[in-house]
Image 1: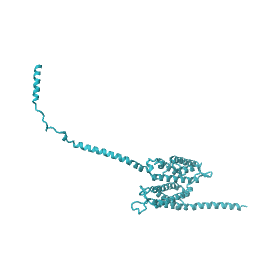
Image 2: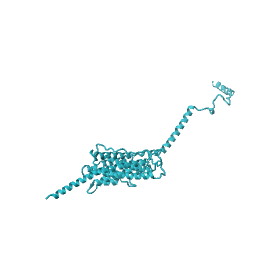
Image 3: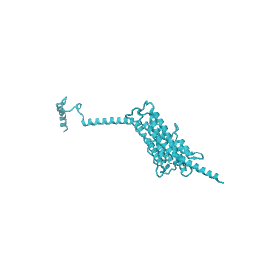
Image 4: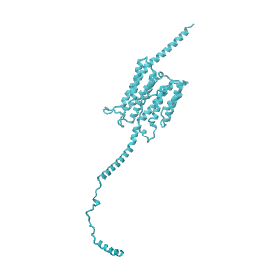
Length: 358
């Protein structure tokens, strides 16, 4: 068997030498150089490249637009009416309004003027002007109440401290000042409710309040008039100074309306129809000025075909509020004068009676 296999092996190699050689250029094979990819895969690759390009552009746009969007979203002026819960008992309504206003600004948007330079609110104009005007108005109103609620011949210490704390100090954070002011106001109202502090009655506050509010309207109208007549050099449709003047006036009007609305139901009786009608006019006038809230403040001095002049509208509303406030003061003053004359005549009668006695 082994010998036979040894004989067949060389012969097998000889037979292989005579086998036909493969062709040099075979035509029955497909060359890879001319192969075409699948249309489905081409579409998938193009779609994936489009998705990646879209994602990259979206990320760049989001990174660039995130800060401006944050600036717009952080500019929120909360001018809703102050609602005092029925279960809360306050000795002086104006103190309740002041505390709720402070809490609203601190717990809402936060104090924009004290934000660091990188913060979106550091780029705002309307909100800082609104908050500055609010603090200034509350400070003056609290000072008025302190003068009407003296203690041992001097303004109440808590109210005087709250009035100072509500005044802005350049470069000093306002949050601790406002928190301390709210605590001082709460201490006064607690003492007043227990009879430990003099509590001014709404009818005693009303005339002084109206005079204060009318003064705000006069000052704000002058500031708005200056901006209306100023040369518009930039900042279409309004400059930063225009926006600040508008929102400062709006803040004063909002405080005036809320303070007046808190006292009006308790200050007047139903006996004098003329006074009640005048009081309704005062409240409506201040409310119109307080509720002005344009998307973009416009101060166009031309024909105003496309955009109105919001500063002029605010000045007009303030003029109406000032006139209505002074008219109500005049209607209330004769009553006070009659009381003084009556007390004087009674005292004179008593004196004459004493003189006539033998």
